[in-house]
Image 1 (cartoon, rainbow, N blue to C red):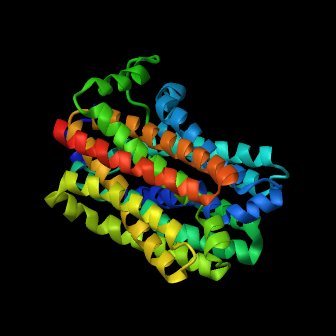
Image 2: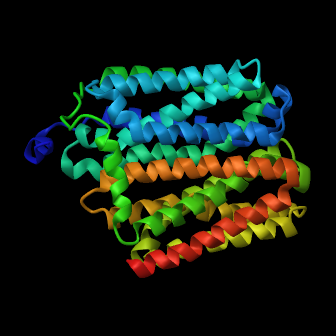
Image 3: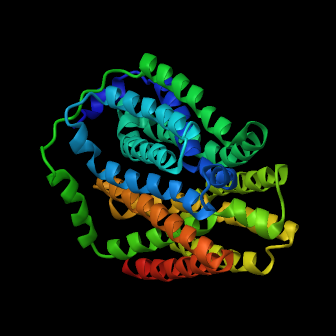
Length: 393
């Protein structure tokens, strides 16, 4: 355990915090870049859009296992060395995907970014705590997550634009210099961070699952899981929907993705105040509204202006949703927030993997209508389970 007095007296390593924020930006951009480039990736690799979308699924699956096992696998490794290794692997992943001669190599690169995602986010909070005095920890975490928020605004539209100008491979190659800059920045600014003493073995991993025994936790985790599953079974296939149904291309796709990102950023900024006043009411309203939007997209899919408005609302609610569920984690695990957070990272990433996989299969075999209907159903069930979670609370 870190001595609180010592932690308060230590100088704040803000440059290291900003380096981690840039890393978070590049990481989120890398994880979800295929969303804005799905059609050209599928065409170039000679696979369906659904198969190309499995690149999101495989990264989520590998993130799950890494988030649960990294503390065991890393052992006594210095955490600075571990972070540098993960950042380097992010650049390697971008290169593998950009230069992939076939679908299998593309999926290999996507699996590697999943390892980085699971490792980085499992360590981010603990690392920030070691870099600044205790009173500055909330600010440090806000800065690190600011990279995440920025990526949700610019990554998708910028990816779509770069894909139009320099191709989807060029868009992925642009991630490499960002990873190199981040690696160098962390190398210079991060202090040595020896691993904390802990009990050895897989008991640390298995202990996390005992959290499910607490009242309301299993239902709450399932509610959050279905929200992300429903969200990504639809969102992963936004681009082919816009091209085939709405009939927009090129810069218009970039504009719609920008609307989603900006609306999501606004939602993330303001949801904290809303949660303070109406906590569970907000968590219930978000999946309900998203379920209605999914069905409305089927009805009004060929009306461009209406689609832009609907996707703006989708971004406003969907991007803000994780903030609410992280607040729930802190609420139900006041003394085990780190363990609960690690479990929630695994749940979210598994849900993203399952949602994008299911969405891809439905999109290829049944078309977008059934995909969006299933998405709506999952979100509606999430709302019902959230009501049950609120009652248990």
